[in-house]
Length: 403
Image (cartoon, rainbow, N blue to C red; front, top):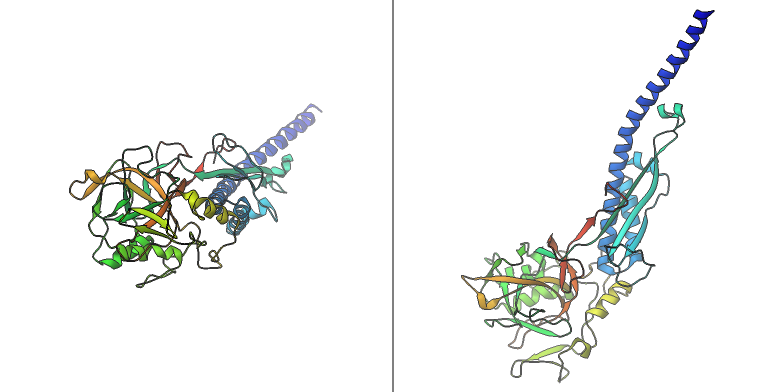
């Protein structure tokens, strides 16, 4: 009788041991699967957040950002069938938007000035079912992921810029107040209003100027460093390159390579420059402030957010957003040494109207935009600095240690 009892106890112990072994084996298998699912899901969510931040930056519309984010999320899930099964049919991310990053404060849809986005997949079931974990009653293990994205602190290294170096001064605005109309031109002057071309391979002559000013310049500049500049006026080729943004193409420039902006509106009548008086005029009247003309960056930005667009955006049409907003360095032209000048800052330029392609009065009319995206590497200045040039980047989400 005692031996039968001992055998019964042994069987119970063996069964419990087998159950434990099955549970451990199940945990090992599903830990690997969960790690896979979590890694893939985080990658998908990161891509979704960056897409939403990009569209939000281009359009200012959280509605358009959500539409683009959902499309990218769904497209990415098709690459990972296991993850799609874990998430379930019709899974969509949750997006919330904020004007700032620290703190990130969710705002209602349609709020102006939204810059940052948080994307979350709240809970995806992974594993379980009738597998090894099922023997101990574990039906699924949740997998979560989230990501935050938006403008970086102002960059210290700027790429994807227009190769024009504005001559500046030592003032807080470097000689370019944001509320004024600026008429800039190439030339030998060293004061605000003149510019130099950044050095680039100009073996193609005027054609090289056209392509570089149209968007073909691919070098980076560093704030505080000296940058090489090139000689020459080249106002015609420079204007032709810049004017691709206004859907004007000449001398072999193509919308396939350099698409136009979605918005083509300009001040009406167009601005002109009088070299004898050094004044900007509109319909014969001297104008100096953005508030004196009927079209500026604020109107442009508002229309970018709400439409209607003058040209259909890509991929349905030929145009892209914010081609009229470009980043450029400001330099100390009076400190030129061996064809180099020091960069004293970066500014965002809004092209108010098409540039004149010839003539002594030819100028590029610009407004200083508050911010713009470029390539590069962030510096120490916090986001939101006036005249800030930034990149779009991911931020660590306090709610997700893996973000």
